[in-house]
Length: 119
Image (cartoon, rainbow, N blue to C red; front, side, top):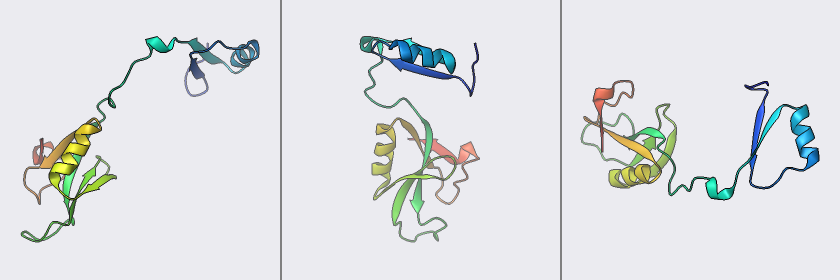
């Protein structure tokens, strides 16, 4: 049986028709019948990983006003903007992330783990 990018998997809670079974055989798709009672119940998303809480604007001079806080992933994609650092941290935790804040505000290189601390 073929596996990998050219193979597919279909999971359902209802029976497969004979035509669906034939289609699956022809295109090497795995069919699984799974009872809904067996499916996991998620109260929240599983942990997704570290996110970084950063003050904006980026590169602002020391002592200047913080406009907002953003939650970013490791690739600098902004996942959300918030008025306070607390709101950003709470949102990250609620969505299954591990929020990290800079130990020193102007030292926030994501490639250097000792620049960050978990909150």
